Structure formats: structure tokens, C-alpha cells
Image (cartoon, helix red, strand yellow):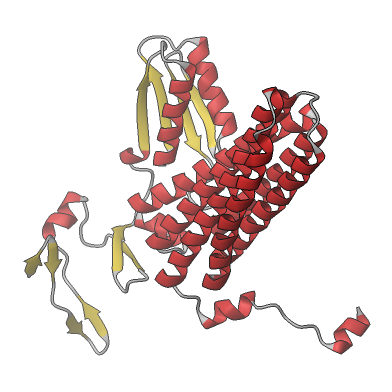
Length: 362
């Protein structure tokens, strides 16, 4: 046996006609309570290595997380703590207080379980609430989550501009409420990636490499930030009240909105197809939008009061949305360099030209 840098070396031996074997470190076997006849599972990694782990017959004690909280914690602080515990990815989460849990604390825990994807109340006592993750580690592929987030964010952006244009407070409130849907998808994706980092079996089930997990997590964060700016645009409706937007300024903002939405769609497409040229066009478009921003700012300089404040909020959020799209384009470039598309992936994403016969029969 050889050891180097924390790695243990074993020589490959051949037994029979075609079987290769290696021995396992004794300390590793005994530390996990393994012995002759126990089953080991392995999964190949994209870098050519193998990950080996013991077959589990049931939930381990490490799958249960006990969280001690205080009844005096502020509601927001408690909710943030629960989100952090959720992202850590434990299948069983026991929220416990010293003494009887107050109705307010219990309500926060219930509200948390209703908002997140996966946790359900398994058991309640006077001092604790036990939550169980009922969806498992990989009910929905991570690329599908990203596409769903994009659909929701784009719809929020469009509706926020509709609310701004018509000063419609009901549509604005709906945009604000939908921000929670984007947040819960982002937290769910973050939980999946965290679980994959901790457990090789979950990483194998995701059918992604660790760099790909990191890429999608960054992309999800960008989409979540763009959703926040859609909320800011919706919030401007309350600031503006019934104050009308000057026609020229309204037209400029509409053009910027369309450019930002187009940049986001193109950035996500470049992430899927690993199209570096398209990603660069998104980044260039974001810089062009900055020049448009300067022109609108000059127009705004002559305005006063709530009109100036509300339009400034909209202008800033449109610019930030475009630059977040450029961030997504940079992530796409990094992914393209890290993992160029294979030939079968290019064929799958290439549009198919319809034949004259098929068009005629349609």
C-alpha cells in the first residue's frame, strides 16, 4: 500500500480470467461497521474516477437534524434559520424549543413547511415539530428547474411592465406574490446541489458533474435576482399613483424592457446550447442598454416628485435586469469552455428544416 497526500494506493490484482480486484483500507471498513458479505456500491465520475459507498438499509442517524430555537426569536430571523437548515438537505428536520413551543413559533414553522418544496409535518409535540422531506433528492432535473424559473421570471417582468403602464395595483400585487414561487424553486435547487456535495449517491442521481451543479446554481441565483427587480418595477406602481408617464419616457422604458427580456432569453439559450457567440451578443446588448439609460436619465432630470422617483426605480431595475442577463451569458461562456457540447447534443438542439411535402400536408 502507498499513501500520498491523504490518498491510499492499492495495486490492481487479477483473479480468474477477467476479474480485477483491489483491497480496501481496514480502517475505512471497520469505521463503517462493514464486514464480509456486505455490499458496496460505486459510481463512475466524469473525471474517470470511481466513488464507492456502502449500501444503506435505512435512514442513518446523520439524516436527522435537531434544531434548537428560541421562542423569543424574531419571525424573520427564525424563518431565515429554517431556510438555511432546509438548504442543508437533511431528510428529517426536528425543530425544538426549550419548554413548550409558543403558538407564534409553531406558526412560523408551519408557514415555512407550506412555502417550501418537500417538507411536510410528520409529528408535533408540545416542544417540537418534526418535518420530513417527502419529495426526495431528485424529483425534478436541475435543468428543468432553471427553465421553469426563467418562464416565471419572464412572465413576472412582462406583468410588472403591464402594471406600470396601466398603474394597475392588482397586477402589481400579483407580481410581488409570485416572487415567492421563484424563491422556493431557487432554494430547492440549492438544496439539491448541497445534498449532492455531501452524498455521492445524490450526485449520481442528478446525472450532472460538480462543475455543472455549480453552473446551474449560479444561473438560478441570477434568475432570482431578476425576479427581485420585477418586484421593484411592480412596487413603483404604488409610488407613482395616478401620475401619468410622459409619452416619450414611456416609449424609452418599453424599449429597454423588451431589450432586457430578449437578453435574458438569449442568455439562457446560450447556456443550454453553449453558444459563445450568442452569449457575447447578450453582453454587448447590456452595454448598449446602458447608453440608452443615460439618455433616459437626461430626460428624467427635468422631472420632480413622485414621478421622478418612481420612474428612476423602473429605469434602474431594467438596467440591472439586463446586466444580470449578461452575468448569465458569462456563466454560459464559462460552461462552454469547461464542457463543450457533444455532437449528439448539437444535433438535438439544431432546428429541423421541414420538407416541402411535410409542409404541404400540414
